Amino acid sequence: MATLKRVTIDPVTRIEGHLRIEVDLDADNVVREAYSSSTLFRGIELVLKNRDPRDAGLLAQRICGVCTYSHLERATEAVEAALGIQVPPNARILRNLLHAATFMHDHVVHFYHLHAMDWFDPVAALQASPAKAAAEALHYADTPYNTSEATYRAVQARIKQVVDSGQLGPFANGFWGHPAYRLTPEQNLILLSHYLDALNVQRIIAQAQAVFGGKNPHPQTVVVGGVASVMDMEDPSRVGEFLYKMKSAGQFVSQAYLPDLRLLGQAYKEEAAAGIGNGVPNFMDYGGFPLEDLPWPQARELFVKGVILNRDLSRVHPLDPAKITEDVTHAWYQGPEKGLPPFDEETLPHYTGLEPDGQLQRSGKYSWIKAPRYDGKPMEGGPLARLLIATAAGDEAFIRLKQQFERDTGWEPSYWFSTVGRTVARGLETALLAEAVPGWVNELVENVSRGQTETYRPYELKDGEGFALGAAPRGALGHWVKIKDGKIAGYQAVVPSTWNASPRDHLGQLGPYEAALIHTRLAKPDQPLEVLRTIHSFDPCIACAVHVIDAEGQELAQFEVRG
Image 1: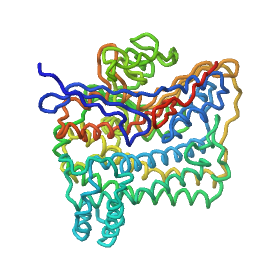
Image 2 (image 1 turned 30 degrees about the vertical axis):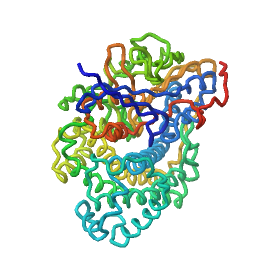
Image 3 (image 1 turned 90 degrees about the vertical axis):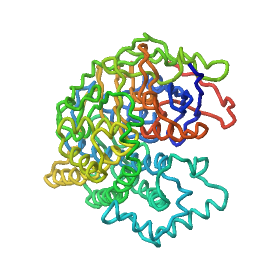
Image 4 (image 1 turned 135 degrees about the vertical axis):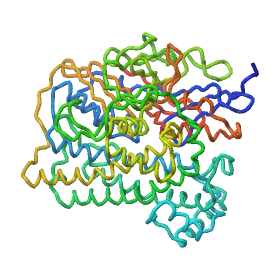
């Protein structure tokens, strides 16, 4: 067998946290082996131990700087489950609104500022005709967002100044001119223009979340038993401000985000048809956005919970939390290699280092991320999983969006099992949430107008165990808590990127990132754009790690965490 050529990407940029990817290429530059490694330690479980459980949400949301609200909500719900609390309707609605803002903010930022440049070349946009670009935009939307010849000419002038300065800023270090780019100069200009528009949109969504959340990031108003944003809920001007900003963001989604995905879906149709980046065949989601005031899992939800195995879309298996375990065979932790359920786990770091040449110890431990498994199987989570589960379960809203995209682009159902499909699914989900927000606001206003202003249920702190499972922007998020003598006695968080970025397990099963890279052909091995495109399509968030680094690699300090 010919010697494989190794390509290492460390760090993978335009993500949250620190990720290393190693791939081995054959003589045709096709990926035959792939390894995913988080090189920073996650220690939030140790930080939470012996803390007051009512502070779990505020502390746990510091896991991340992006999906902060998702961790706040899930940690709070886990404590509520342990204490037997069902929050009142207004708290449920406000939490849905706050979480919808998190999803829309995350997805817009991810596509335009972290992932879209894997598909479009901003430098090539300087060669476009602004007039032709304005005409081209009409192919993907009846009323394209902020589109005119003058707008595109101004965008070119702005970017030309950046390029001529020699300091490309966010556009530095890209593989511009790479043969894997497929867009025309005019299509590149459309995407570049919306990249700039999205900078303002993400600010607007963050402001909207701060209306009911108090601040962004790291909202403060979700508490065990309900929410604390009572005055904002009862103030028509504050409710109107939230709705106006979210509708403004929704307009961008319908007039820019979705049309841009139709553009990509047509331009990269061959890649979708070939199934490049399809990954593991199993998909899972915990569901999300409860529509009824019933404890999980009884409430009807906007997102459908369930499991799909072996890409069989004829059946959605019911979700069984007892089947969730975490394997540490190739993770830098101590514990039974075959894995334990989260309630039985401990966080015991066991770093074994790298090979003498600085490469991963592939036969041993090679990542700070554990390997979550459902019934012993690796699972992909995230927008693609939710789209597939919902449509397989017969959800009309998801089916409408999916079929409309297929009609607009000429896609076949099999195309969704791909890097392009994963990218498009995220945008469809954003559109669905934008549609749902006004209805939840109306529900809230009607409650308040009838004098139903309850936002909090009193409770007594007691010993117990609880867990909360639900959707986060990147996938399935679960928190597990044990409470004893008024303190947290045990805590585990199994986060979306842990599922997707997991290393191999004791059976040698690849994690979703690793599996998605196998069979990918690289046009230029020294510019692995195709690898980054697939990894970025998952929206990696490796910040479930405690990390302080120096640009020169020097040790800054040592800390001892005492129980």
